[in-house]
Amino acid sequence: MDKIGILGGGAWGTALAAAATQAGRDTLLWARETDVVAAINTSHENTMFLPGVALNPALKATSELADLADRDAILMVAPAQFTRAMAASLAEFLRPGVPLVICSKGIEVATGSLLSTAIEEAAPNHPVCVLSGPTFAAEVARGLPCAVTLAAEDPVLGTKLMDALGLPTFRPYLSDDIVGAQIGGAVKNVLAIATGVAAGLGTGENARAAVITRGLAEVVRFGALYGARPETLMGLSGLGDLILTCSSTQSRNMSLGKAIGEGKSFTEIMAERNSVAEGAHTVDIVYKIALEKNLDMPITKAVYRILKEGKDARDVMDDLLARPFTDETQ
Image (cartoon, rainbow, N blue to C red; front, side, top):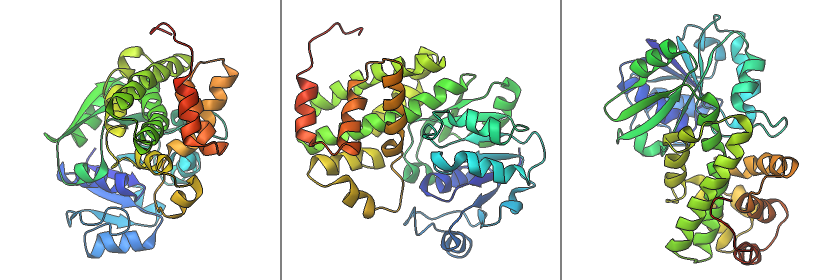
């Protein structure tokens, strides 16, 4: 695991590349944007997606997928909805058996598949792992401490990846629950939008705590459909990620919700951004599955009504607060 490839030159991909380089790995980052590649290779900064963060000159970037052919592992950091296509394109160049580590968070909207399923179908000769947890890209890139879940069905492979990527300030904790490690990271983005809306409406810190806690109940309910273990959803990739993403406007999803709560439209917010708020996509498929499976996910439904049906945020919040009282286990 000496040679690590990073597929995706956004903020999170760049942060992971910085961490891998700091861990002493020969790290190559692939980015679609030639400006990103040039900036990393010449000025050692991702001026488009992670400005102001100095990168180790040892980190190199490329816009050619073929350049990743000699890598020992690939961290998959492309946006969730492009993961399947990118895995298929990349597999043409990799030798069989090179692990593909999912570092994006989402569910494939077109199929309802987890990203692990999408990769397994697109690149069947490559083991799939998951790296997920409570992390903001800029903090990771600057070397500030964090902890993540590293899920792999093969414990030997998981240990190799942990040893390759681990640092005192980037602490992987092993799991074999690759399903659970994905569910928490995907659904929490939807809940972060809800928390942001509540903040934008000025509902207070008590309301934020309520949304986080009742949102966690929705995560566990949804995860049970896929066989996610409850203890995984209570760990770094579940509860930990949910707390972080719902607590700061560093989160693209929370900041999106906050702007909506303050009166901006979804369309105008997205027109001002060059990065993806995955929850805006994930809410489509999570809400659809919840309807089909008769799952009670009122917070998810509220986000769907605001983003996809154009309902007024204040009216939706009032409807949510008017729901009948019930048992906390429900």
